[in-house]
Image 1: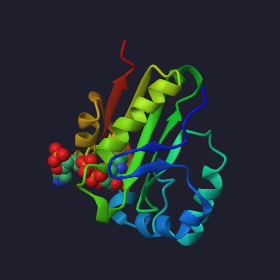
Image 2: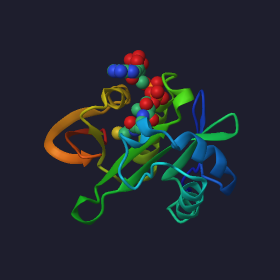
Image 3: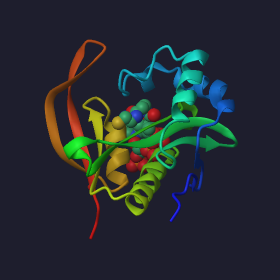
Length: 176
Ligand SMILES: CC(C)(COP(=O)(O)OP(=O)(O)OC[C@H]1O[C@@H](n2cnc3c(N)ncnc32)[C@H](O)[C@@H]1OP(=O)(O)O)[C@@H](O)C(=O)NCCC(=O)NCCS
């Protein structure tokens, strides 16, 4: 079975990144509140050059694993899963962000749910996990609504902008 590279949501389309996304990507990703909740490889400020570099990299990723969140033809966010590798290869880490003008519409919730269903259906992972920084209750809520449970609190496990925080490890296991 071929792996779908598009997932239709009610309010958005998850689709492959394309080179024409650079401007929209840079405009939405250049946001401190997004950066504060992402890993450091997500730049801040987020320039057009960063967007172009990301789009070139995204083109090398396995199909069906890394999606732009498209609303009205523009990329307004991103969502992906990345295999954990080595002995942890039974699992993958999910990550996502949504541009500020689109917050609170349920896009992330629907996206995480659909992406997780897709990952379990088309890949053989036993678990999907997500790492939430302790100051990010919105993301924790998104995951809970998408069928994840908080499996662990890893204390003093991360640092962002000089602030040490706990990692809330959320998990959704393959059912059945
Ligand atoms: C986290 C993020 C993806 C959420 O996107 P979104 O599309 O606005 O999320 P949704 O609309 O699906 O759901 C948001 C939920 O959080 C709730 N929420 C909003 N503000 C909140 C707050 N301050 N505290 C607790 N819950 C809050 C909403 O009410 C909603 O829950 P509800 O449906 O029960 O009302 C977005 O804010 C973002 O990109 N943040 C920065 C990057 C990030 O945190 N990525 C995830 C890293 S783990």
